[in-house]
Image 1 (tube, one colour):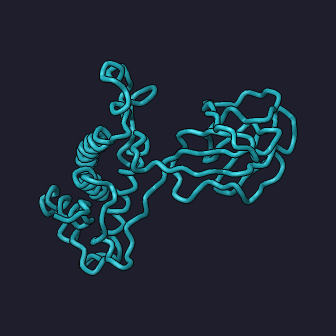
Image 2 (cartoon, rainbow, N blue to C red; image 1 turned 135 degrees about the horizontal axis):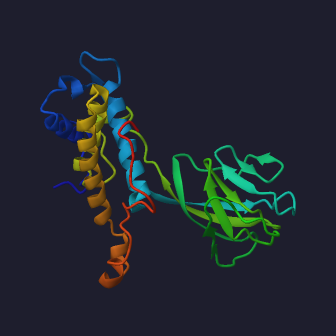
Image 3 (spheres, rainbow, N blue to C red; image 1 turned 45 degrees about the vertical axis):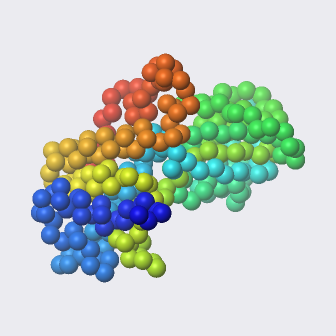
Length: 267
């Protein structure tokens, strides 16, 4: 048995083709392309499904997608005005008046989980920051941010009076399957035991392309069941750190905070 238990992409492609009863004859890649179809069709389908699966796992805080980064020496806010806010985005850092090149959200960023902070230039412990929803309170600025808000693809902060260090725990996308030293379909899938889930998401993409909404919905449900199993097997899940009696009281990581999960098949 090999030391690396990862399956390759072609295994998921073959599983999808089987589930579709072989009705997509050109789903088998030859040299990284499809026979009789436009270039990269199958590669695009697989990468679309790969992104879909990762987004679902990230929403459930699967540990394999969790990453950390340190924003060192985040500049103080440019004004003491309580109405002024700062933010960190893919464009850089807005200090309330000026857009600076750093810090910037990391490549592959999906969503933030937790932020902690300390004053820059110290070796103090990092203090957890509170996530706020909808709107940050307009209060006098202090020597820390204390709160944060995720909105419009940016992390908003009240802005501190001094420079701070901010640690960010976030979900980050794994790279797409692209041709390199190995053809894309021969590359390993970095999420272990995910063939069942990824194959269903591939089938979902095919059924959407066919206009089969009912089939797409069925494959999506099966894929989400597979994603749930991946998360349940995740050692970082809540059941691994809480006693059974407490775990039973906790919300399912796949249960929305409010309302029904009405995700459309077209997404």
